[in-house]
Image (tube, rainbow over all chains, first blue to last red; front, top):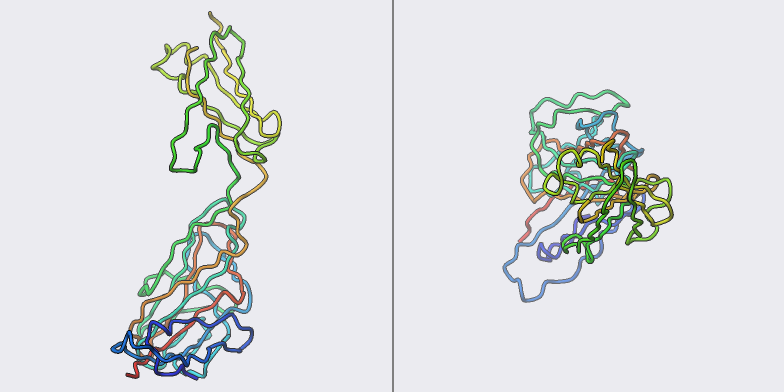
Length: 251
Length: 70
């Protein structure tokens, strides 16, 4: 079944709903255009939707694979394309086409962050077919025409908290927190405890790092700079102790 | 030791954030000519080891043929 023929194209850009099996949700599409767009071209749209029957695990990192489409999931009776055993789709009728790709993968699986790519490719009629092996994802060089591509960062990073924190997010300026450790005797340390501005992020056992801008060649001589060591540790929920240790053997 | 600006970064060593279980995206081509005999297909890749695509109702390729009628 194709959509009715009397609705301007921009009103017809619907996608199929996520119907199960072969059920369609094309809608009646019977609304007639108003008087605002009398010259818009009118289109009939025939749709076929293909899907996967099992999760597809990427066997290698950084290589491009053909998405293993394996079944027809929705149709309005069109015969304009056919799913092949190599997971590609053959266009049967010359014409104007729009192709949609919807992907669904866990935000980041087993890693903190990584680049992902999904896309649609075209191989012209008469070209060599893609060589496949049954039951194995097909790795390709990705040299065919790129109809559409999307690079997506995956993310599953550790929660972090900064002190001082920007008051209203990344585009605001942090108000500095000045600290003067003062005189530190040899083999001694000076501490300051800091309450982190976002509760619930760190607790004992978590990681903390600290910096102090006066630990610099502009502020002290190189011997003093070499002798001083700054460290941080989470000593209680939301509390970090920062220590500057004087490791010098000389005063 | 003179005054300086103190900065602290805390990082949780066991929890993660941003790890959506449903990172769904819809990608569309423009409407363009295809010839009989052309093949189209979807590709995917990742720099994360063990990554996988989920076989759900949100995973599909939809081929639409647009025919101008008027």
